[in-house]
Amino acid sequence: MKLTLWPVSLTDFLSHKLSQHLEMQTYVLDPEKLVDPVNGHAKPQELAEDTLPLDPDPLHGLIRVNEINAQRGLGETDGADIDPEAAKDHDTQKLSDQLRTYYTKHLDPFQTPGVADLAALQAIETAQKAFDKRLHASFADAFTEVEGMGYPGVSDPKLKITSKLKTVDGLDHDAALSFEIKMVSKAGATVPILRLPESYNGLGYQNLISMIFRLMSFRDAWMRVGKASKIGTESKFEPIHLVLVEEPEAHLHAQVQQVFINKAYKVLRDHGHLGENPDLQTQLIVSTHSSHVAHEAKFACLRYFRRLPAGMGGATVPISTVVNLSDVFGEGTETERFVTRYLRAQHSDLFFADAAILVEGPAEKMLVPNFIREHHEFLTQCYITLLEINGSHAHRLKPLINALGLLTLVVTDLDAVEVEGTKVTAAPVKRGASQRTHNNVLKTWVPKIDSVDDLLVATTEQKTLEGDQLFAVRVAYQLPITVQKNDGEVEEEALPSTFEDALVFENADFFSQLNGHGLVKKFKDALNNSKVTSDITAADAMFVALRSGNKAEFALDVLLSEEFKTLKCPDYIAEGLIWLEERLKKKQVDVLPSIEDGVMAE
Image (tube, rainbow, N blue to C red; front, side, top):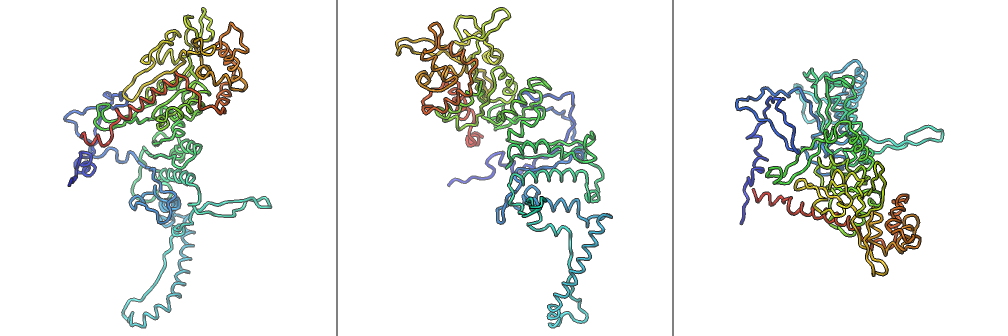
């Protein structure tokens, strides 16, 4: 029989005994010796041996901290399992509970009443006297019967029953907060027709209202609004108000998420003493897994937590490094403006993906996911974001991808041009024609080659930019394709220029029989040589057609084909997807150790 005794590891021991063996102390650091983190790894400042901790705590009275955690307890029904300890926290209360708490702290007329409260207090006292009178009459017979038993005697205290009414009692019921539904009457007036309990409203709106109300409560408690100003002995405002919000996106639609993150800070500053007051500062920290929330913030405000497995960065346990994105692009640069606006428009999940695939245009964005589903099942199990970004701009994402350490496949075009003096002309891809690439990804990112002839023979190693064990960037662009003519008697080399003509050459039989308009028809004619003169190759004809053709329409025509599943993915993309699949598998098997292995190693 095997018996496991506590503790089984240092982590297990500290989880129970941390506070008994460790304490928090504060020291003064030298700002001149501050060192920025390197690759997300902090560089703590070493203390001299004779350095003494500060006493008392210098942070007391300096920072006020409030928190909204992810478990907000909304939608709980009677009888649901709720942690009693967690229920003490406002975060687990229903909206009506939060309303009562706010009322008790800031509005209750019984708490240090003022002139404005006198009328309400008088009304309550009058009601209490009337209720007491009714109670006396109701219990008279019962008390008389008790007296018949010999108690109370002449010298014994008399039984007396009284009531105590409080204003908050009027809010202590399930229907204290409801949602009113209105309709337009025949007379044209808007009148209420129904009130629904708070549990009948959607969790999204409950969550939004709850969080906004909590933020208001934090602000008003900080500013001692209402009755809170007369309770306690604190006379000074803490100069810093730190508010932590965990995953606000729960149950919220994308648009509501964006509204919340844009309005939350304004709510926290909506007070006469705050606004633009530099002496009282508010800091809002939001943790999120939502790209909609992340994209509403400036890069200068973003901190990215990159998870690293045990063994990386010199750590023996899994860790997270914090990447400061404030200086990724530089402040106010053209690249920062472009990336910020583009990611918002595309709703990209770059921040939360296992890997990214950057594609050139709409045709790739529509068709590549289908190739993945048909031929790369493993990739469908991974969190991969596919972002359409034109080749002339894809390189602008380089600083962000490097900072995130995100495994990335860039699917782009050769973009061959012929240069004569100062004249640059786009041209079909040809060998030995001294062509250059106009694609900034290939010229400045990876493989940093501008000769088309050199690009056509580049190796996989040249097309791959290695980072750490989890990070690499691989580029995929058009490769030479061998096509058969005259029923297979003659083999020729085709040099595609774009995804579309590469797809056609890889699936010549499919497109030579596909009926359609626009590019589909032009490609079919080029393949069948029905409307192409003998001195123009199919590749040249396709290049001309692509200059004015609608690529998105072409992709839709292909998707509508009944034989779509027989399509072969262009080799250059297939190679890139195989590379991505192998890297992700390697990450799971070789790089990321299991938790059990980590415990056993310890």
